[in-house]
Length: 205
Image (cartoon, rainbow, N blue to C red; front, top):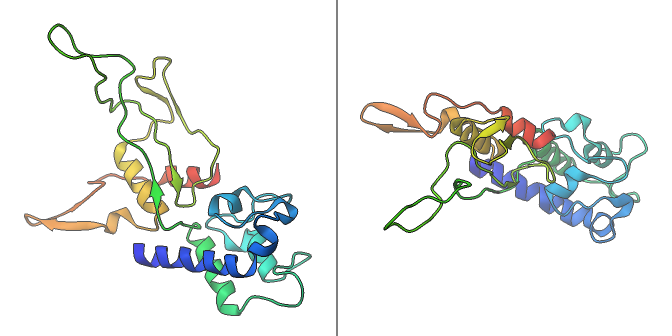
């Protein structure tokens, strides 16, 4: 599934680079830059170029299908039916990138240690920041917050299993099917939990 998602993302990006970057690259016609999924999500003068998971509502797909007043590419040339289909499948899959990135585990806002021990900041599982890019994540947004000390999650807390499930969802993987057999039991990263509400929030907020 991951290989399929990665291949789809690369194919979609290749189509856009070949046919659309001349106008919607550095030139930014109508303020639209299609050189990355983040820029496509930001969109141009008409708003976001795609609605992840909803190809039929996406301006980009309407343009390459030459529906209404939008026409991409310009002129009489048009994309091949297979290319349009790939872009449609890519958007319906959530416009995934080939990878997503996060950051290291959180630290406490206070220094630990005492006499005879070096001062430091311990790991903090109760409230930490995760910076994400790729996987169709919409840039420039903040979801949730900690208390005034930065110690515990206060607004929109997310369980670790839900975080893992959402990251896998952004990569086009169903966390419930990602299992390995051990001692007669099917184990998975999200154990018996895992909700993907965060993935939708990251794409559409």
